[in-house]
Amino acid sequence: MALLLVVLCPGSAWAGLKPGDPIPALDHGVSSAATVPPTDGRVVLLDFWASWCPPCKASFPALARLHRDYASRGFVIIAVGVDEKVSAHEAFLRRLEPPFFTLHDRDGRIVSDVNVPAMPTSYMFARDGRLRFIHTGFHGKVSEAALREQIESLLDEKE
Amino acid sequence: MQTNPSRTVPALALMMLVALLAGCGTVRVQPWERGVLGEYSMRPDRDPLAAALGEHTFFSREATGGGRAVGGSSCGCN
Figure 1 (cartoon, each protein chain N blue to C red):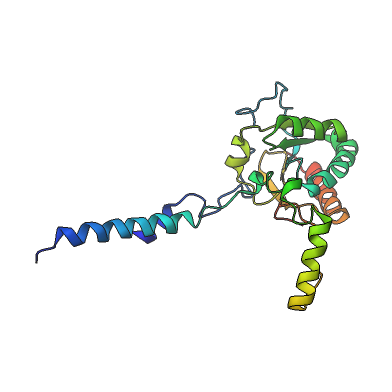
Figure 2 (figure 1 turned 60 degrees about the vertical axis):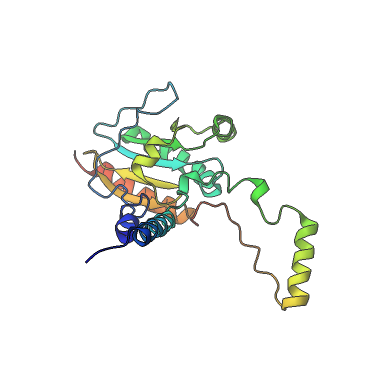
């Protein structure tokens, strides 16, 4: 019985997004009134960040460069903030002024559904809406170069 | 075979308690729930004097020093 309860206990197994999965629903539990940009036929980077996470802060300028270079070719960044405090979320955005779309998953429903393994984690979806690549953490130029390579290969693919 | 209820009930209760405690051992703080752990007040080196005194104690009593200069943010990454 003890073994059964341990197995059934929530949190004992990680079951997050895996390659081939579709883009998760982003419209529920979001306090922001902003509209999620269209993702059909686009390469989408779904990024989970928080104001208290230094690697997330380090990743934003890189994400801004990727947005600048590839948005016109059909690349969309959706950055999901998971701060519990609205003030911390808003202060972070005021300070960094990201040019890409952000939303606030205030009650943590999206991030719980996705079950991210670390902060930050970003998920790259191909034009067919299926998950292709997962990036855990942000490692400066190495991560940016890997993202660029993957974005370019996915942008070149036909839907 | 007959069982003695006065022994069976406490034994079952004990088993359930152990099972519940064992189950709780697998619950962990999720990566996106670590904002509080990343706050300034949770930093072990927030007080320079206390940090220096602690370092002196470790050095003089346990012959150890350093190793606390790793940046951390509670993210579980990098």
